[in-house]
Image 1: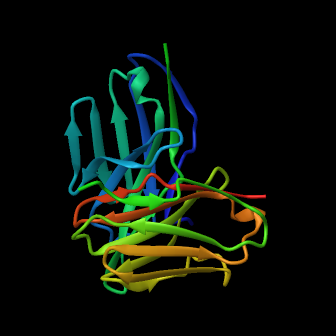
Image 2: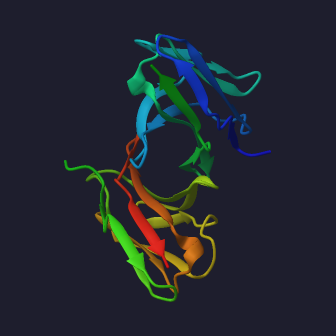
Amino acid sequence: RKEVEQDPGPFNVPEGATVAFNCTYSNSASQSFFWYRQDCRKEPKLLMSVYSSGNEDGRFTAQLNRASQYISLLIRDSKLSDSATYLCVVPHMDTGRRALTFGSGTRLQVQP
Amino acid sequence: DAGVIQSPRHEVTEMGQEVTLRCKPISGHNSLFWYRQTMMRGLELLIYFNNNVPIDDSGMPEDRFSAKMPNASFSTLKIQPSEPRDSAVYFCASTSDTEAFFGQGTRLTVV
């Protein structure tokens, strides 16, 4: 099993729709999680952090389910500008140091 | 701070040539990561440093790849000799306790 798994998509949704992505992780010791957003031909940028059960920021909600080892990202009232690839990131302790493992990303295309 | 700075932004080279990618992390960040991104394999961790010391290089594809961090403000990733399958975008990232900041990447094409 991969350390971090995501559905690659693409998710094609109309403007205004609500869309959710899931990400599963294998390291049960992981305590914090991140969602990054990557636009085409650009670098990934932090979207949200998830440290406990969840986090909400405007139209974006991230939730964590430790029992099932997955995190989700919910986008409400989606905008054309939300079109991007969303990367799930799980830090893990490696010989006492933190390393970041990225999922392969889920591509979202919001259509007018 | 100008953020993580990578150079060059684009590199086109012939197979067999040596390629050196450069990264200047954000001042004060202790960890630096090199990633490679392709359509087929996504974002792969190649190597990361903590306080200039290489911690995990298990992601480095083979001996043709090497990375150094001679000081806290500079790192290089070298490919020698380069091959067409090395074509990818190479990202450098440095981290604070809570966030990883990426450079704009180097788009490498080996022909």
